[in-house]
Amino acid sequence: MIDGVRDEGSAPRGGDDAPGEEATAGTNAPARHPHATPSGRPAATSSERPAATKPFGQVAATTPSGRAGRDPRRRRALLEAADRIILREGPEASMAAIASEAGISKPILYRHFGDKSGLYQALAERHTRALMDSVRAAFLRPGDIRTRSRAAIDTYLAAIAANRHLYRFLVHRASAEDTATHSAMGTVIRGLGGEIADILLREGLLPDPVRVHIWSHATVGMVQAAGEWWLDHPDVPRETVTDGIVDLLLDGLPEATRR
Image (cartoon, rainbow, N blue to C red; front, side, top):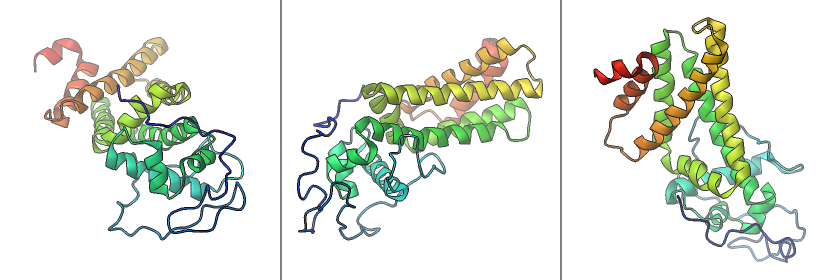
C-alpha cells in the first residue's frame, strides 16, 4: 500500500480566499476575487517540463465531477499537470507538487474540483474510461474469440505497463484514500464485464446468460489481478502473460498445464 498524502487534507473553507491566494511565482498583484483566474506565470517550454500526455488513450475534456461555471479547458490543464507530476514523481506525488506544477496554490487546486476527492475522481474518470474504451475496441475487432481476447488483454497490459505510475496512483493510492474514487472505478470495471457479456450473448458464442456473465466478470477480474502481478515482475515478457491468460480462459487448466 502506498504511503498517504503529505499534508494533503481538503482545503479549509475559512482561509482559502485570503489576498494573494491565487498569485503565482513572478506575480505581485493579489487576487481580487475568490473565483478570479490564477495570475499567469510564463508558460513552461518543452525543455522545462515534459509534454502533456494522454496515458490511456484519448480522454474526455470534462468529467462528471466538474463544478458548474468552471472552464473545462482550465480543468483539463490542471489534470494534465497532475498527469505530468505523477508520471515524473510516481504514485506518491503530493497534492502540493501537483498544484506547483499547475502554477497555483493547493487550495485553489482543490477549489477547481471541490476537494481532493473531486480531483481523484476526475483523474479516475479521465483515464479509467479511456483504458476501458481501448480494451472494448480491441475485443470488437474482427476475428475469432481467441484473436479478439488476446488483442483485448494485450491492449490492457500494454497500457498499464506504459503508465504504471498513473495506474498505481489511481488503483492503489486514490482508491485506498477515497471511497468515492474506489466506487467509481469499480463501477467502470464492472460495466466492462457486463459489456463483454452482452457482446458474447449477441454473437451467440455462449448461449447461457448466467454463465456468460460469470465468465465475463471473472475474466475482467483475472486480467486485472494478473496485470498487477506482472507489474511487479517486469522481467516476464508481456506476450507470455497474455498467452497464459488466454490459454486459461479458453482452454482451461488442462491446456495451460501442457505448455
